[in-house]
Length: 154
Image: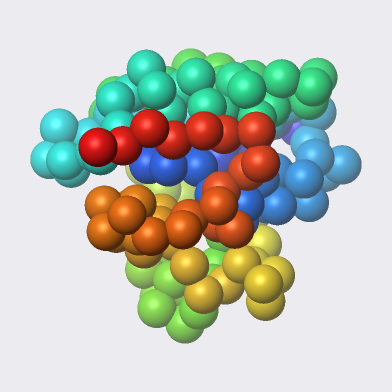
């Protein structure tokens, strides 16, 4: 079986994330969309909220399983039997960063390969970080997040 892990903070999940899963869907037998718990990062939304959103967004995707992990992503890949990591690339900066991480994961991950998908133009100009700033600034963020996600932020 060809399984992959799509790791991220998903703080919050964006339409760009969903588009990557949609495009990777025919390539893999199972896609683990997994929230990495990072004690260094200050998340805007709780882990439970983010996992709930992922479960809601992907509830009709029979090949998607939502999870969480602590520690190295490649260890989670081994835990769930995934041979691939899925990553999106929006720009050259993403490529440089993700290439380095991919090479390190390949060294320590023992046969975990990274598959890169280039973001569609309509999703390449925003990230969860930018969407968080729009939310915190009380701007209209609806165009950036999946339609079935409701955010309550005060």
